[in-house]
Length: 77
Image (cartoon, rainbow, N blue to C red; front, side, top):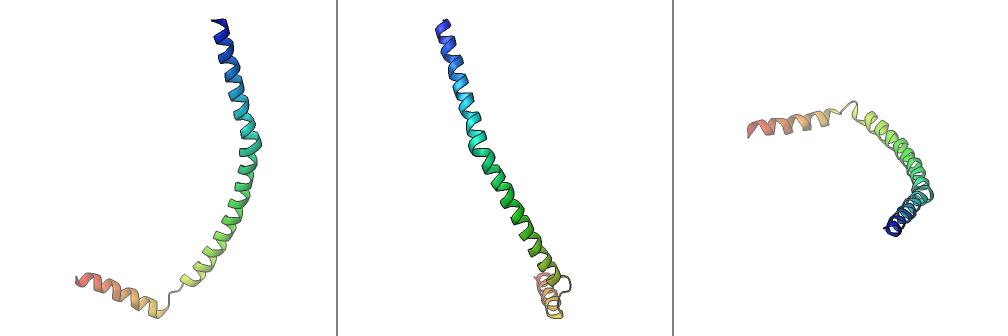
């Protein structure tokens, strides 16, 4: 019985050590890379939002007429 308990304890230690080594060696550096890539994406997204916001702040007369005609077409049905 003591032998089985020892085997389970050693197996548990080996599995836990392997998981920790994987987290430290693989997942943590990958997490740092993802953070850097996400920051670049966030900056690019903000640039796109600023550019889109400048274009859509003041809709042109043609755009306003087009929206009005679409809405009036919905009410007719």
